[in-house]
Length: 166
Ligand code: PNS
Image (cartoon, protein in one colour):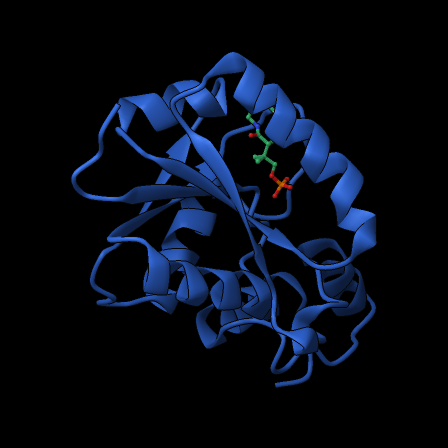
């Protein structure tokens, strides 16, 4: 299948969006014509923010960025990618520890559909240790998360954890 406009899906839980995700999106925008950030709707996974809140926070963080749109999806990622006529799935790669799980997902997705390619982008070194879960854990215990998440996310986190450093 030939794609005239190169659209990529950047899927994830984004609970919440971190500066590591932002870094991957900015790198992806240099390669692809359009990126769809797709928040997985997964009722079986306990989350801090609702899908609606997560989509809202991503929209606020990228306010007005051309060629970026934010959506949510459920079901198989490859089906969603096909529906959006996307040529690629973007995943961020931090360290070796990410590799095994990412490799498994990419190969399964390839098995399920030959029409979409998984592209791994390396995060900047400064984000190699960050993840939504570790940031949530730090915030829960009142640690300083400034500079690790976009400002709109920081504000939403303050609502959830009133003890958070402003
Ligand atoms: O941010 P995450 O939690 O690492 O993202 C995982 C995600 C959303 C990419 C993955 O769970 C996914 O694609 N789920 C949709 C269901 C699916 O397609 N599963 C089979 C291939 S992994």
